[in-house]
Length: 336
Image (cartoon, rainbow, N blue to C red; front, side, top):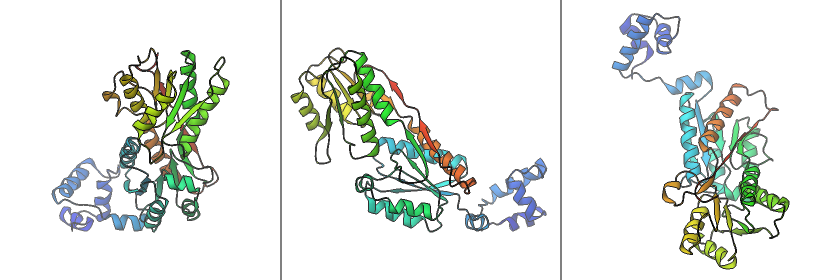
């Protein structure tokens, strides 16, 4: 294996000079930097990351735990996390909880032995349902920096990145009220999650405060055993006067649109639909689905930035930050 010493001997310079030249130090002349880097490239020199980490007590690696890689939101967030981490010289190790608390716990234990400098985590569904946060709080007690994103808990004292889920659903509902809609129904498959409860409460709050709105709020929940299409069909069967639907997940809004068209609803003349779906579904809907944009890339980037800031300022344990990413209601073809 080629080392700094090998490069220094061949170039007849000191090891220190080689090290500084590889880092483009201003202490080294441009000519020497060019010679050193050219030889390093020719000999395929790679820094010894283990030696570097031992010297700095850092691995320059971030552990990322997400609930579901097949969910487009989390796949896109992971992409942004990797891109931003790489920009700052960090690698990532990714683990999937698959919505299981046990897998989330195992991943944290596996990587907290010195393999990573800190964690970025979105909490598994089972963890939120059980409200058992001991494994996450154990990471805090070990003084390992932790950033939670999207699915968070107020019972964990760490940095967080969220969107205003309550406000986003509230804004969407108020827009439908402003269209003159009189029978607005909410549907989704995330009622057990913190984000699902906030979105539902945002809808309920807007309905309660809507002037001249007389219908009771209606919420349809898609459970794990249910087929999305079946619940959407039930919604239309039981509510022939429905004139607006809010989907709080990234699937049911598209299913509701397709069912409405099959039933010969004119969208948006007879029925408006707003989803939380990301742009991955937009090319496949007609008319184009109006959505609440979560700015997933910004969520991923901000998670990395918060973690790196925490790694640089580990003593500021009493100043945990929550960064709220602003959402946008993007009106397209399924709303007036």
